[in-house]
Image (cartoon, rainbow, N blue to C red; front, top):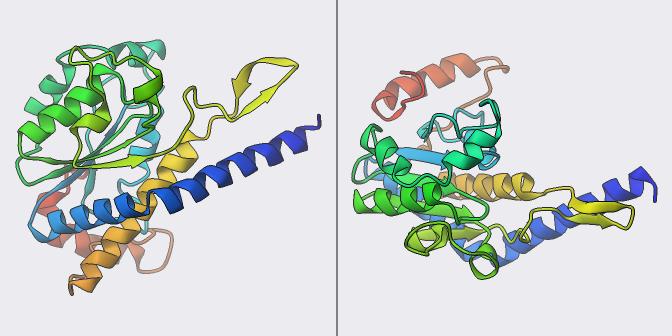
Amino acid sequence: MSDSKLAGQFFDAAIGLLRRVRDEDAGEIEAAGTLIADTVVDGGRLFAFGAGHSSLAAQDIVYRAGGLALMNLLTVPGVVGVDVMPATLGSALERVDGLASAVLDSSPLRSGDLLVVISLSGRNALPVEMAMNARALGVKVIGVTSVAYATETTSRHVSGTYLKDHCDVVLDSRIPVGDAELTLDSIEAPFAPASTVVTSALLQAVMATAAGALADRGVEPPLLRSGNVDGGHEWNGRVMTEYGDRIFYRR
C-alpha cells in the first residue's frame, strides 16, 4: 500500500470522527458553550486541564488568537506534556491518588469558576479526582473524554468511576479504545491516533458556541486577536486590562 493511500485513510477516519461529534454531540456542545457563557457573565473564571497528550487540547484554548482571553491552563507539574524526563513519569503520575487534591488546594479555583477536564480514557485517578474535587468546591466541570473506555476498560480510581461520572457536561470524542485509526497486515500495532484532532475541534466548537451565546446576551466576548496582525497587541492589551483579575497566565 502506498504511503499516500494511508494518509488518505487517516484523513477519512479523522473526518468521519469529526462528523460524528458534530452531529452526535451537538446538544452537549451547546450546553458546554452556554455553561461557559454563564460563567463569564456571572464573574467566574475559566480553567482547562489535561494530562499528557490531552494537555495539547487544553493548551490549544489558552492564550489563543480567536479564543476567549479568560481561559487559563491548570497545570500539574510533570503531567502537562511529554517534556518531563523520563516521559513515562507523566503517565505514572496520572495514577497517583491525592495528587489532584494537592493541585486544587494550591490553585486559584474557587466556587463559581469552571474547569474543563480532558482525558481520553477518563479512567486514571488524576482526571477523575480533578473533576470530583472541583465539583465539591462548587466549580462547574466540562469533561472531554471517550465514553467507550468506561465500558471497555477498568477504572483506575478507588471509586471505580470515570471522568464522565463527575461532570456537569460530558463531551464524547467518540475515539475508539486504543486511539489508533489504522491497521496494516505488515504492521503489528495499530497506528495513527486522532484524539488530538477531534478533541481540539470539539473544544473550539464549544468556544465558538460560548462566544455566540455571549453576543446573544449583548455581552462583548473577551476574545484575543493575533499578535501578528496590525493592532493585535493593542486590542489584547485592552482585553487583558479589563479582565485582568480573571487572567492568570500573565502572573
